[in-house]
Image 1 (cartoon, rainbow, N blue to C red):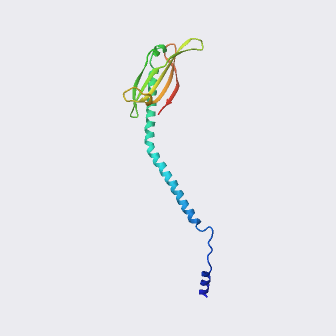
Image 2 (tube, rainbow, N blue to C red):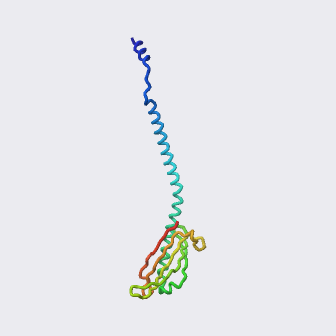
Amino acid sequence: MIWSRLHRARRRPRMPHEDSGAALILAIGFVVMIGAISAGLAGLASSSVTNRGTLEAVRNRQYSADGVIEETITQVRAQAGSALAACQSAGGSRTGTLNNIAIRVEWQNACGVVRGSDDAVVAQRNVIFTACQDTGVPCAPNTVIIRAQVNFQQGTTGAVTATFVQSWSVNQ
């Protein structure tokens, strides 16, 4: 009796199902997809680590140039004399160190005259500041970190009454 049941079960042929093997294909596809995502994330993480040092150096140069150029604006603002006398000088340069980075700041007077609201001619004391990393030579156009144009409004006594930043651009 046991033998007849086994024999009967063996005699029936199994019919192949149209979905047979689908689970294996899904499992392989899932493993390949997870592997591709992991490889992409590993590449992203490693490139971020290598770019961090470069970006940190650029950011530190920008912060140092920003600080030294602001110190220079304060010094140029404090220079005594009328706007006409200040506009007769060609400009100057100075170096400063901030965050162990030596920065050279050069400035040029870009003065002009305008008519005031009372139709009087008023001298405009504009100064263009350029900051670059100090190499002992004047700033070349391709080494400029920050360029700013500042207007110093002066009263009749020559004292600066207001300072206006007309433009401020970071190049690197």
